[in-house]
Image 1 (cartoon, rainbow, N blue to C red):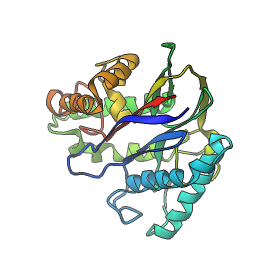
Image 2: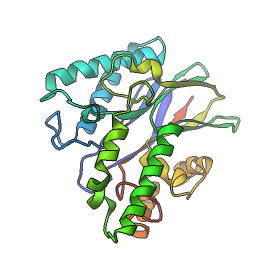
Image 3: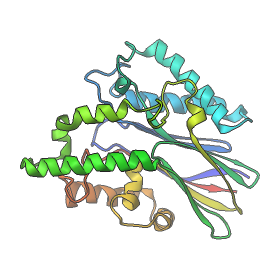
Image 4: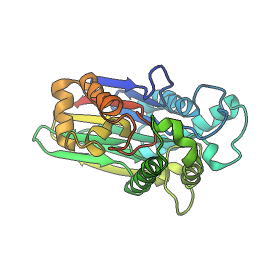
Length: 288
């Protein structure tokens, strides 16, 4: 039984801009990273985006380690974080002075093992799974972080309306930057919530789940920027989104997503958010 990639999409939120996401596949493993938009004035890695650097470094480490790994997924991620941390030591221009400066990412990582799909999740990446019997299941995303960020995004939209600000939300993000930094400072500390980052031991705090399935199964792994078609914009239920991925293809869904963000609601008032368009990454796979 194998994981076969049917389709992928990897689209930057800003045309011509850096894409902070990444995705990969190796044998029985598949994953999607969603790098968190940086909040620093100057990138620590000397690249266009520390978040993109982290997502790429995580993918490189998974590609190297996953094929030979036989233990729990948390053990694999622990090794990957160690690899990425050592790479940051070698390539970073300086160490972070505050926690918000550190590159972080969400992650959905899966492995199929004889009729069981093992899943590990940080942050707001998600997987939708339907097996050969028609059973539909979903896993991923942090309700705590989603609720808090949605509250901030709504307040940000209200604030811009009150002040009569027009244009894309990206143009006014400085007005809420300190709040975003406070949220980021809660990553991977007691009382906060856990994400993929440079912290040893973070893997033991990841959410995990195992799903028994009948082959063949189909699954959609995605970042929240893509999942917004269902979660934020309400164009689909989660199961309808999986159906649409199979029927329309991921590129068509990406076009639908960008139409909403850039033509129907470019100022982000109908659907409050911190930027007009987020990076959107997804992978559609067949298992078995």
